[in-house]
Image 1 (cartoon, rainbow, N blue to C red):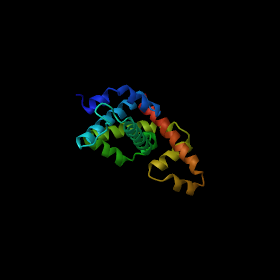
Image 2: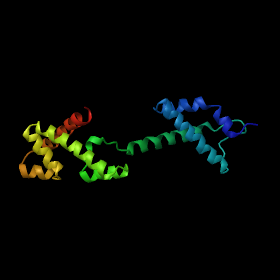
Image 3: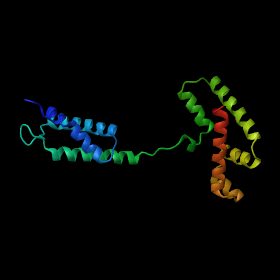
Image 4: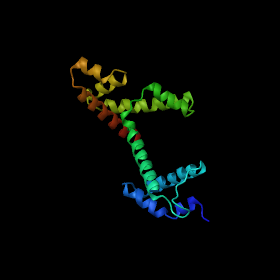
Length: 176
């Protein structure tokens, strides 16, 4: 006599098709079905039953389980906020902490900072004075809002200029 999981696994392609009908790709459907097998295994081990009789599975229960698992997965993915590394401003202190976590000695750390700092300064010297001033003010720790309030220049103008300079420096220094 076959176990409940063996009977359930005989319809594996049907379970995949059902999950795909919810709107996900093949790999995600495989993952959801595998998770369903684990969930059903735990249910059975605790004394639960998903069978109508000895040979027929409760398809509606499996459908509801798969749909619930897919909805939970979709909700979890919706809560994840992806940010670009370009959107994160690193201070010298952050860089030092990163070097410490990577177990790079202070000597190597200073060499790397000085190497990039000199390249940054060379690139900044070749830029328009306005772009250079905006970048230097914000890098020195002044917030975009306070700089905007002091100079009466639009917040978004300063923000866009700063990001433009960061992207330019990143291309010039790290992609050469």
